Image (cartoon, rainbow, N blue to C red; front, top):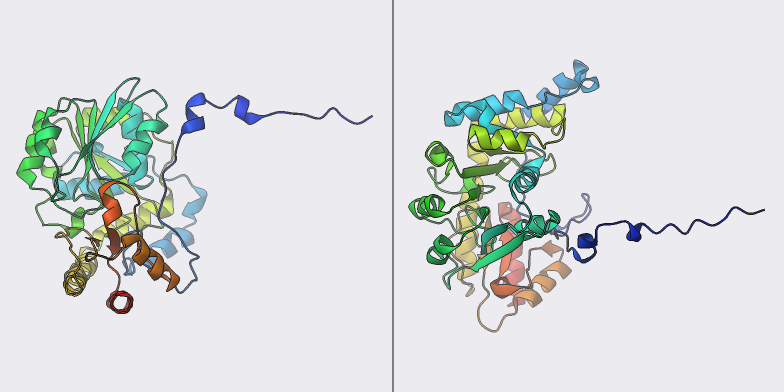
Length: 364
């Protein structure tokens, strides 16, 4: 006698909110061994600190992988805290800065709450709002015609949480610090300054020093961009002792592994190498911008490791994106809102940037 067939359907059990949910769409990731010139996900074109190899070797030789990692990533906490004159407990180290953002939303965004953000900015914020599945509402405030934040409108919005990338993504624009702090002071809820690209901006651009005077302010950082560790997944978020203590309650028990911690610590401490590679990116950013502008592109000043480029009239951004893809050169095209008029190009090595420029020149 054959056993009765089980007609179990998981769709019957999932939450109804998930049925219409649209997940985050990352940039295309080709195979690691391909010859594609990858300028679409804002990765660093240079290798991370050469001191990492020895640090990893010591972990393996000491047999530390058989042990659980430090629960708080304490050494990394202390390194960051020392640089910014903070209490280490104001820093929550996370599995990439995306985990930090998720914990922030999980801790503070509840049923019917409003999340406010400029538009465009990091496209994960509306996804996170929906992922909470509590009926929170996302309110996007369009940027001005010059792509800068509409501070007048943002100051008049009310909500539980205000999020923005600083410098902004995908525009690359660094807003005046005084304007941002005025916005922080006027907003009735929490404010996140997402500083994924801050190391490519001015030396005093970060809002971290102002956390002590603005208890509603949080700042997130990542090792993915300027430290060339996108494959590692380490980030952190800084805020008041009280705010971070509430968020820490929801983090995974051991959210950052031993190797991740050691590699991040080693990279963070190697400041000379970091500065050298950071400067190379900034130099190439300036050179590539000038080259593309000579072809008729309109490009706002960038304080990141990418350029937000509007092709000259008559050239379709989407067509250019697809044509470059056929030549094994990946850039980013967003097909919505004001972004559909632009392409976003990550700064590569000199050789990669030259190949990109020559290919675009031929296309035009």
